[in-house]
Length: 169
Length: 161
Image 1: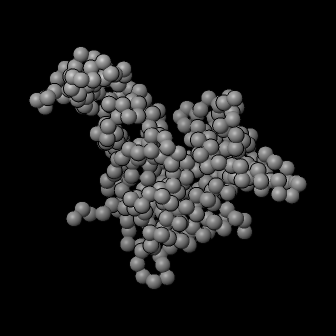
Image 2: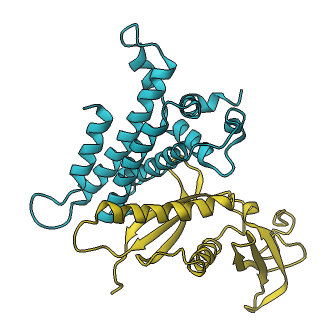
């Protein structure tokens, strides 16, 4: 199984009730949210890198993948799912943005923000229903990405995830 | 809105409405028309002067209009409209509204939808319905083109003790 799918499976396991009785622990729920985000992050970053970089020489693509920035990716995803989409997006996508791609962008934004809360905001409480919703959101991103990933609009999205901050030039 | 605070800084609380002294207060939010109305509250507690309508998209973060009360009223009105249109599911028990910065430091509006949890883990169809409603609220908030980026979260409703 690939790393993104492994991470998604790991997120599911973390959110399950413990081996004993009672609710999942806060630590497990928070790690589940973080892991669900990283499943989606690696899903998209692997495709973005494959599009931007040749496979060889050895190590080049992994080095390029390391250059992806969470903030840039979120800004790009937000720009695509905005209503109307950002002018930089509209300059490249003339027709309607496919619904599955909007779903991917929306899910990415939601998961990244919740991952930030889960990892850093101890005042925020994570309960089972909230985490179930987020894992299900990640699953939806996987499904919708599989539907749309070979379209021109998805290729533009992948480029935006990588180069958004440079596109203003 | 332009502020007269710099000119009149030594003369008590200022508002962005020219020629008035007092605290600017939101009196109504109308999501159908994408606007909010503000009025001045005088020192004696009464609302005075005309009401000033402002587009929701024109309310800048950290301006005098950008108060928690404003965002609460906005979400209240949105949920009122959703209920009126039959789009408020029965699993929604309450909601919470807060303003903060998001993970990238941008001003954000957070709406947490509180649902009543079951005794056992919810099935996928149920969770999909929760998420569909999260997306619906998110989409409605996005339409207003708010300067605060809207985020919608899920949470479990607990009976207040």
